[in-house]
Image (cartoon, rainbow, N blue to C red):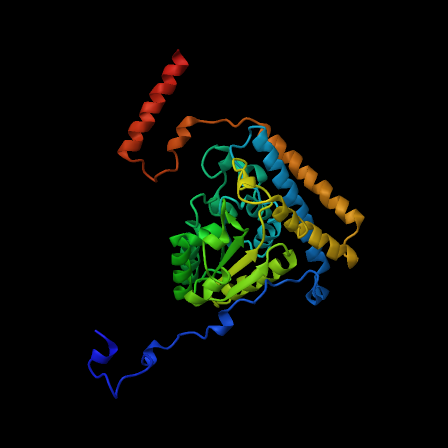
Length: 378
């Protein structure tokens, strides 16, 4: 049936839908900037907080050392796998720094550094990637959800927690982290839609590091930017230089304040780059060239901040050395913790799976227990 065949067509035909179909929200305020927002190297850097920036610098140096040590542990067989965040440290650290104690962080498998910056012990942060026990830490104690290996499944969880907190009147904001690859998952779209409809106090941080393992962003989406996707759900989208920790901190802090005040969710795309392979099991040279990596090295988040702060007299050699020394202490502690063989009880496989074990699980536990007893008697 064509428009002309519809009842009442003709003189009464409307060229546009009736008023009920008008946009519910003005799209203009929701659109991201045309270019990634930056602070370092711009006039906006004049308002930098020296104490905050020195802290950011120390955390960046510590984060880089954490990445290097974790990668070394994989080569020593102490870690089964490690997804490095070298080059993405500004995103990870800023995400942790803007949260209050009562807030929740929802990380992906690549976001162990964000968990460490949030205060989690580095050994506990790597326990899951070691293949030991369950999550490695108590999520409720640290307000850090379990590291999510399935892509984007943590996003609806973040929305659910944030919405529940709002209904209870709790002063809680959830910050959910995901990679550009995760934005191709259905969970991403469902989470954004529910968050916007419910006006849930949640912030979505997309770390666009260029590749979903080996798939470049251009083969995932035709959108102008990932931040533009926010408009379709009725929330603001922000496009930020993910290697500029001052810009990341400012934009994330603003989004958290907005969510806490009842303003609803925000989608933030941090344009960054994964300097190392997807994991230690990946060969990145198969899908990207050295020239591309070298170009991004010139935009290293630590170098960007160090140049800005030293030029402004906010950071000196004493501060640089202190940050490196502190990072070495952390690395030594991480090595010691990971070099200690864990006391593993195979029966832990059946703990914390269900509140009450199923019959099938009890059968499996009994079978394993019998096998272990037989080995002891052999």
